[in-house]
Length: 338
Image 1 (cartoon, one colour):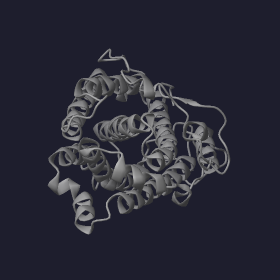
Image 2 (tube, helix red, strand yellow):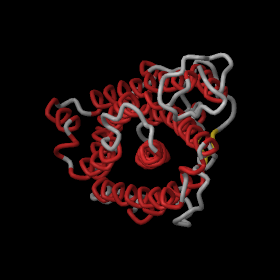
Image 3 (cartoon, rainbow, N blue to C red):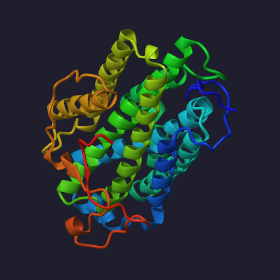
């Protein structure tokens, strides 16, 4: 039973949904249910032709590296959800959302599995993609960054001390701001750049749905962080702020190592300089969502990322694209405070 002084990060598993302490998490869960899609709705038929006839060696290298990252990225996210986050957020309505998020991460894994099977018909190439953490240094570096924060909570059954709560918050901030909010947003930029050239329609259509899901995941995580901050403001001291900035700086450099690899063949219209500026812009967006001052002061260099209609792209491709089962009205601005 809750007491009037109970907090979101208190140890235990509260089971009481009425009276509901955090209705905002329940509404997020309901919104997520409305945004249901399936991998079977994504049509990859045009992509195969693009891969064979429209992409040069540099673009193919970009795609191969991108799908190799996708092959394991959401699995890392899912493991962190189950092992480190679910058991420490003590509100049943929040755990309802996390259960839905876990389903969506599994859906993303299925999408990327289907993507790899379609894009890489060679069995050896597929095996290398799924083993990217071991054999591709730029992806191994990103995984090591993720595991550093995930492993910091591994095996911790209860977060009771102030230091343990701060460690949990740093894990959640890394999860939302760096992994979902930086690494995946960088991947989305590569996809939407190719879309701006009229390429890989199926990948872009599926990415629209993943983009919306990931944006909602971030919104939930930032709401958990904001709630914890209101309940226990002493956790958010200057040292935590400095650690978050250092974390984002490290994430930008880690993603730049991937950018150097992805763009090593020279992709017309994309440069590592612009990618660094874009990553710094994304990092500042995440700091703002955390209620912290911007650190990098960079602007978005990619006009094609200014506004993403992640509901439907029918007009752009001039073909049918399945919408969510229950439509979400309007467009989603890239720089909106999700």
